[in-house]
Length: 426
Ligand code: ADP
Image (tube, rainbow, N blue to C red; front, side, top):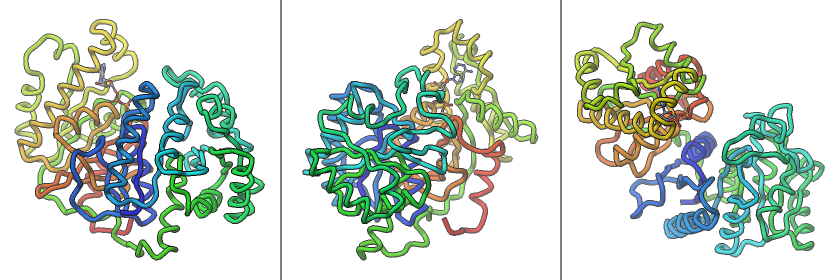
């Protein structure tokens, strides 16, 4: 086990794991801190926490518990993964968690680099850009929990950190790993412990990753992960792996569950239905009337499932969701739908489903919890940021957990078709 990662949310953990697999590391993602050591040979583990917006002290405690587990598993380097839009407030949690992990690891300096140029997140002179606009002019300025109103990451991180924050500007980054390391030394001599690092393209990410080879801790979005496996290969610790994304071959029925109401998911559900495939709508107002909505949907699906994959969807347009929320309450409507979809997932597994597509971040959390999933082996990518995964153990289930806005319009059919294709390189 080489790299131990701690992610502050579930889909972010998958995004990071996906990048590691694509760069040649066999990777597991765990849901929370596992109770016991895990079976199976892997090169990296990503512990998925839900610590982005909880009180800072709790985020620190959970992250330190994850670190302890990863240390016991034998990891050599550690990675704290946060959002590529640096989602945080003046209370944290990026600064406090980074500092606590540095203290626990005896790290003198660590980078802070949410850049992910592939997804149009770039940093120049410490300022984070989302596409063409500075962070503070992007949609993130209106985020309900972590509104980002300052694009200057040195200032943003300093506000939530005790340690001194500095900058490795692009001029050094563009000059390569040795120049970046020299800048780390200069910053450290000036008392800096957290270094925001500019990056505007993948070559920058590779140079930064190379410069961090000896750092006990890397704090970043998922972007830097594309460069870290090369450090381990260069050190002779990681053999070239053509099969890092390999999953067990699993026979069994297929089904899809969608609780996401995002624009992309609405398009994906419409695309599935328009192609004449089987779909069963889950109506929150029917759930609210009482009775067992999950059992009713499952018995409706029984004759269909034998013939092919069936989609269960609560997915609705924003107007429909607003109307339902006005009647049932926002949290209540969400919880009811999540409970029903989770019960449907359990019923599907009991009916022999072994390939399951789930759409929606919260929905995925509810399904994974209901199925008692503790860890997932990360497999081949379907669309950027969304891989197939497999549960561990003798009877694996193939799962893909898609956060709302990810995936192409034909994602549902495409993901299932991919499983029937001959194995191919990651
Ligand atoms: P996303 O990744 O798109 O944000 P999530 O699953 O995280 O999707 O969140 C969607 C939320 O909306 C869930 O809590 C889900 O239960 C809820 N929901 C789904 N369908 C409906 C609906 N028709 N009306 C109201 N709420 C819904």
